[in-house]
Amino acid sequence: SKVSQRYRTGYHFQPSKHWINDPNGPMYYNGIYHLFYQYNPRGAVWGNIVWAHSVSTDLINWAPLEPALYPTEPFDINGCWSGSATILPGNKPVILYTGIDTQNRQVQNIAVPKNLSDPYLREWTKPGHNPLMVPAGDINVSSFRDPTTAWWGNGHWKVLVGNKRGRRGMALLYRSRDFVTWKKSPHPLHSAPGTGMWECPDFFPVSLAGEEGLDASRTGVGVKHVLKVSLDSSRFEYYTVGRYFPEKDRYIPDNTSADNAMGLRFDYGNFYASKTFFDAGKKRRILWGWTNESDTAADDVAKGWAGIQTIPRKLWLDKSGRQIVQWPIQELEALRQNGVHLRKVHLRKGGIVEVKGITAAQADVEVTFSLPNLKKAEPFDPSWDDPQQQCSRRGATVEGGVGPFGLLALASRNLDEYTSIFFRVFKAQDKHVVLMCSDQTRSSLRTEVYKPAFGGFVYVDLEDGKLSLRSLIDNSVVESFGAGGKTCITSRVYPILAVAEGAHLYAFNNGSEPVQLVKLKAWSMRRPRMN
Ligand code: DQQ
Image (spheres, protein in one colour):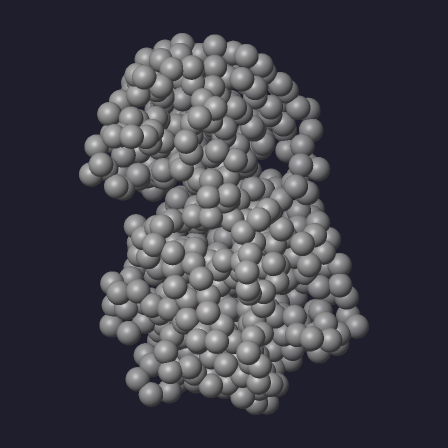
């Protein structure tokens, strides 16, 4: 019915029905982008997992194909779980994935296209030498999964497989000369105590200069590496930036951020099991992430679907060399229409301005604020190390000195419902601390949906006195990019008033210090072809 479909997204990736989770094996091959993903062909809850498959020429319009991998063999008869694609020399794509075998063990398998001249690579075959890797020795058979894209170095192919030993999360390293026979390295590429199972590891090089992406096998001067892991205990991810030593097959994080759950995240909201790929066509690295529902399982069954993928993001190393920056792929901008433009709007304490003339339920908005006076910033207590907790303590209506200011997305006419995305600036000993929040606590009058206030710190010096924010609003999702993509937060929300024509968009300031909205651009977003 119409009511049950009001939360379907307009331009975010989703299939026509049923459950989805992790993005799998994203790749660019002969002019076509492929996205595979974990999918239940029989319902809106997790189970019966296959690799669904869609193709695109622009990462925005998607056509569905038949599932590429589904249980058929003893080595994957209980499920085809997450994995990655590698394009081998001679332009030959292969998939490595986790199969759940007859004994419910997790094993790593390979699949190859049945017919390389099919432009869509519709059918995949599983060679007879599977499985490639089995949980031998003391490897826990149910904590051994999610192979990465392989890279080449020192005469070997190498891949990582997620694992844990006790509470120590680790990325096991396997090597092969021929992609057929694989041997486990005596030591993992990297591990960290107390982090639990590392799901969906991702390991890739980033350039020290500029935004260009690099192929997985790139090493040497001018290159750093990023290791990302998804923590199944807390359901969020963290990453480190560091150095990779190919001869020793060791990765050592720079000690510029924590190598545990307190570390940096691609996204401080609802975002999991992410995976990057190198787009050789446009020389960029692109990140996909899964965004789960945060309504109830019964709601999902009633909707007939659950889960979306975030808008693909280009990702690169920040100039500081300490963190990753992300930005929605440029192709998304082709969906923009009916742009509106505000300039130089003063927002005193309590100031609010509506952005009119767009479909506020399905929009793209970019805004730059300037902060004339930072002297009134509230003092920062160094013990406030958990940004989410700070966002839960002080919502968008709690007056501060500099901030809160930002956007109210998916807001109802009388502000009975809204999702607030905002900044708050604090003064620490010798610097300013910027907090960014995406607060769902007022997002819906419904009480049974999960409504946390997500938060992350924004590592900017505020020298130019400006802070920017972009939000991609799409019926039940708000994906926000602070300070040009230094801090990203995705929220899932389920308003009952702020839907379709009932949704509004505002900019606001509830800090005692005035801020200026230097410029705001917003667009209605068209619907692409979505499966
Ligand atoms: N989802 C897959 C696993 C992976 C988990 C199963 C992460 O391979 O570890 O659907 O969300």
